[in-house]
Every structure is written in structure tokens, then in C-alpha cells.
Amino acid sequence: DSAPRAALFEAHHVYLADGNWMDDNTVQLTESMYDDLPLHLRVDGVLYEAQFATMTVRDSFRCGGDHSSDGLLGGLTERGYNVFKMDVGDGTEEAFGCTGASVRGDHSMTVIRHEVAHQFDRVVQADTRMSALFDGLKASA
View (spheres, rainbow, N blue to C red):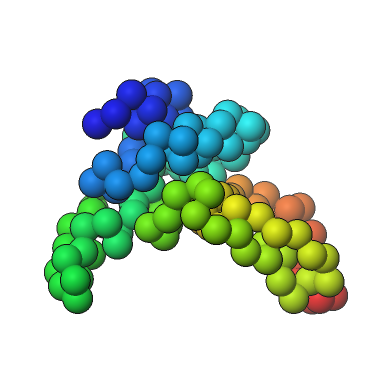
């Protein structure tokens, strides 16, 4: 593994299972994103009851149309998520489509942030006040 991958794991207990596909810049920006998260979202969301989380780039282990490797990385830890095979700078996307707000964001980091944010659901579900607020927002949408 590379020094940025080791730094991500040491700082945030996130193992990057990408076959060394992601470039160092993308890994460093991912670590920076985790640096900015409040501790309770990292501990009670991303790492909830697990020693570490796995960020997988499942596509990096595929050979052509062979997807037989897809299930191999799923059992490393209770916590994990998959992101796309792309690096920061590969392209942008409309990060808030269908919301009325227009913001173009780096496609790779938008996907990484999106998948990490799914891990926060555990924090919301564990708090009755936050759950009620979330349910109210969904109902009014």
C-alpha cells in the first residue's frame, strides 16, 4: 500500500480496497474529507461497532465482464461502502440535480461524500429527535 492509504487508515480507520487504483491525490482528499467530519459521525456512523470501515472500488478488481471478484471484499468488516472507479479531476457532475440548486462538483468526491453520508443514517436512527426531524423533512418534500 501507499503512504496516503496508510495515513487514511491510521487517522480514520478506513481501509481502501482498490487494488492501488486510486491516485494519491484522491486518497489524500478523501482523508481530508474525513478530517472535517465531526468525531461523532465518524465513530457512531462510519465505524459503528467495527474496528474499521472498508471503502471499496469494486470495479478495480474486475477483468472485462468477469464480476466474480465482487463478493470477495464484502466480509472484511461490518462497515463499508463502494465507490466508483474514478479519480478526482476525472470529471464533474450536477451534484444537486432535481433540487432547484445548481452546483457542479467533482464527480469522484461527490460519490465518496454521498456514500460516506449514508453511514450517518445510523446516527439519525439512534436519536429519536433526529429521526422525527428527518421524517418530517421527508414528509414535507
